[in-house]
Length: 196
Image (cartoon, rainbow, N blue to C red):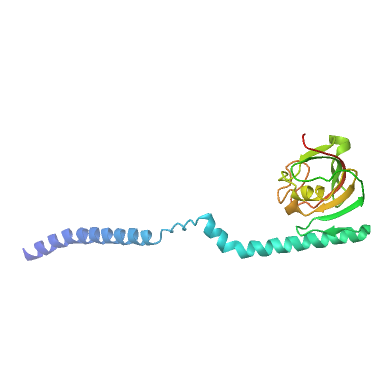
C-alpha cells in the first residue's frame, strides 16, 4: 500500500512541479522583458534645444560668414573695383553720380537692375522683367538692397554685393536665387517719389 501511495504521489507531484516551474519561468521571463522595454526619450521644448546647440550654430554662422567674406573680397580684388563695406556687410560702390533726389525711407524708388551670382549667372534684369519699384524701408527680403538704395540719388549707378543674410538668406527666393547665394546687383536709380 505504501508503494502504491508513493507511486500515486509521484505521478501527481511531477506534473504539479512541472506546472509551477513553467509558471515561475514565464513570470520571470515577462518580468525581464518589462525591464528591457526601451524608455522613450524625453521631448525637450525648442527653447531648450536652441540653448544646447546655440554655440555650435553661432560658430557655424561665423565660419559661413567668414567664408562668404573671403569669396567676396577675392571677387572684388580680381575686378579691381573700389568697393566699401557697411556695418551690415553690404559691399557697395556708387560708380556714377547723378544729381537727383535721394532715396529715403518712406519713398518709392524705381530702378533698372541686373542681379547675378558671382560666377556670372544672370538671374534677373530690368530688360527681361521691367523696372522695379520698392518702398524704401519696407523691403524685408533684400535688406542689403534697401540699404544700398538709401545711399543713392536719382541718376546714380551703383554696384552692391550682398551676403546671403542681407539678401534671400539660406533658402534663396524659391525661383532663380539658389540657396545661400551671394548676389551682385548693378543698379541705376531712375526715380524717387512718394506714391507708387
